[in-house]
Image (cartoon, rainbow, N blue to C red; front, side, top):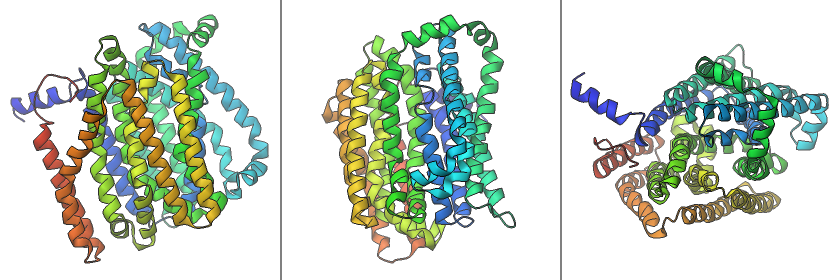
Length: 492
């Protein structure tokens, strides 16, 4: 490799500035996404939609629980300037987590009635995994936030990739004959992935910060940290809980009105679009949180928010529009004809998931600007809108009506959410809207190509055209936005 190329790569992935850390995290997210997508091709042929539905329901329970079981104290890790003060917060989050985990352990003898009350009796045996999964997920997350604070983005990437590889390999290994573990293989793979993340993140934190953490474990200081950062449990916790419920509400309410097969179809639609968008958003969010706090002090918050919003639109708009146009054919070819309905589901909820992926990373503005009450209000508004849509759609007895209501309510709620966030950062709507117009224009050549071949009703040809369209979009963006050009490390 020439010295010029090495210098270019070193500059591109520099740990300084904004672009390098984001690209470092995105490199891991890209690996995770590729592994996850390849795995879906295999897993869709090993497990049924009903088995996926039960697994998705378990994962949704965990996503909701982890949103409040540390009372969001880990978000306060970014606030203190000194590592020792941050370490008090680290221990505080783990102490709170331990208390919640103990409480859920005490509920296990009543798992059968709880499952019946939830309307999913088949989930009862797997509720035994809730406490250990919760413990692994939350300790891993607190450790990950600590690593982000220390700007150890490569360690974060390693943990994400290792976790995904473990989860996927376990799911495939337990799904092939003669094992045929069913939903247990999917749930067990999820648990194994969380344990792996815990081991990777926890090992790095202990190896590098053991002395600081050991000195910081004093109950008086931990209590002082609880009082100092009380706004996080008072406002951030309920808002994060509501946000998690909003995202996972379809998984929790669909079984009330329809069967687990519908949950499975919705889960695959969610996985194909929301998971990659959330991986991208998560990478951007972690770096944005660090730099937004600095930008607020330097009065640069408007600039960094506007540019980050633009890049989120760039990354998410084209794949969303592509699946809105060709989702059924792509699902038919890639996952198999039994999964074609999942591609149709994407066409109903795709725009909601896209706007959610744009807004979610920017919610760090509520913490940076200490507007947690507004965060709670927005989460409550989104929850009410989506819950009403879900109930109305479920009572209709028609899956497609329910999906239509979810899509409309989700888009409306997220547009309001996004407008509030941009307003908080003093970003005017004109440049924000121009971002959508710009990347819609870049998307048109590829979308026209896919639209032209859809009339052939051949999933293979449509999928090939979609691949070409994706490459065309990437080429246009790289060329017009000069994303790989060597320039000073500023947000771009």
